[in-house]
Image (cartoon, rainbow, N blue to C red):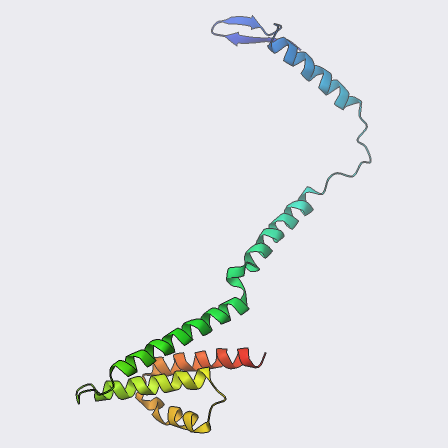
Length: 159
């Protein structure tokens, strides 16, 4: 194999003390590889290894602590309890509402009662009756939201 390169308009030899030595080593390595008989050898399962690696990455993502259903349920419960606490605090601050605020105060009391009923389903049937009786005062969005929270809490309590 010729060992030269075209540099500008001239041919330059590559058989020097740098490139020539590297090319000699490359020829030796190619000669050794050519003497190895690879017939009948089983190739490395690169496709399987690649698929396994991709599956591992996907499982790590799906099983990450941020996506753990128990952690998400605990977070939802904590958020709900914080909301109930804030609603209780608001109710306590507005002990004697003016006549213009009375409807809002009643609605806030109803919402708080509904949330308490959801958080503490084993309390008296009286609370369930009051919450059910006053749910018409809530918007459909609030009723749906409370129903979803109730289902989540019930599901968590029985599993």
